[in-house]
Image (cartoon, rainbow, N blue to C red; front, side):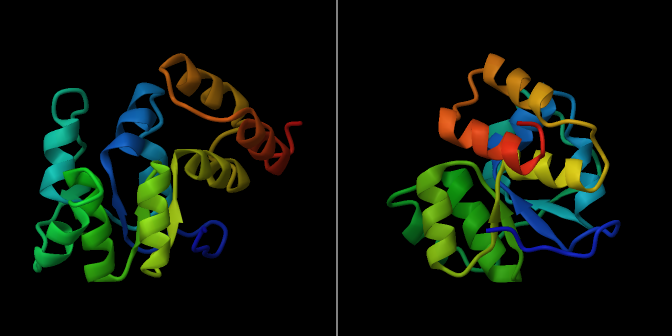
Length: 162
């Protein structure tokens, strides 16, 4: 589910999990987040997860949870980064940028809007920030980003590239 906005304007805050940050950094497209959202927030667990591979730019803000009980409950089924990202998004009323299927389902069941790496690429093409999604998806797949054949075709169709 994508929480949309007016084309050409940045959307509200978003909370990101580690995997989309790592994936977008691998294909040198981390800046798309800055172009799509007013502010990107990450909880401490996400900062710890990405720190070995991604140097977060200063426009991505770390924010601690005010209420840790939500993340403690979610830790029962999710990794710390996912659980803190979902908890922070719930706490501040924002969408969450998340790729993992189980985490997406939990976030959606809590009424949180979700977008993933592929959604970021698709929305970026729709806004004219990139010319095509296919080369970036192919690059992600070269980095072992998992995507089903059906989803690959669906994204390319939605992007007008199939």
